Image 1: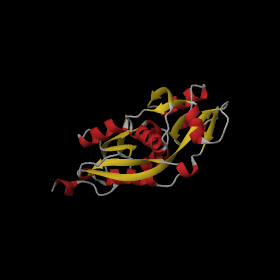
Image 2: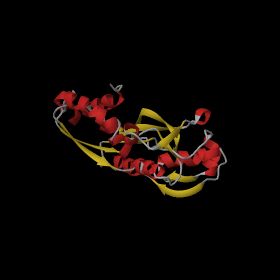
Image 3: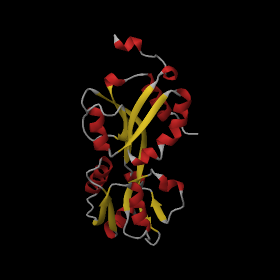
Image 4: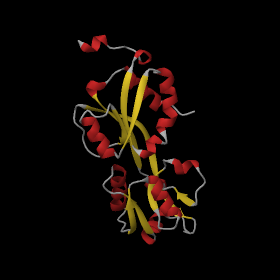
Length: 214
């Protein structure tokens, strides 16, 4: 009954949306989508909440966030949560410029490895890949921030497997970037919200996120 009194279009909606996002979404999808959303829903105030995927999922489930933009969880979600696919990003091997060779598996076996933190959703994909390829890597460091991983590799600490996403793609780098070819695996970015939370402003934001970039 209360829903009947609410605006039926995003342009009429007035209020606040709390949106959680992982770091690479804050610098990738969101900056491209938010100008479109601002034009379509000028009266909506957005509050951006940073976080890692697992924490953002918990915040949506607890009702602390209206929407979360994160890596697709590797497990079944509660029925109350709605998961919407946004984009798939391939993983690549990054190495310092001084590392020679073009065989990713050989490089991973021989070089020190900067690991995408294994407890994160993206890091679990890396761990699964290494298990499937039966690779025992020589770990130099483990961390969760993509930009920090890139800098560690640029400075010669080791090589790494990371998704092709983030600010490092928009600047000159001191890296070699090797495709994985037939071995390529992906991380999927999704939007997560409570099914009961669907309303015009959220639907409008999702449309803006899924719109092709200019």
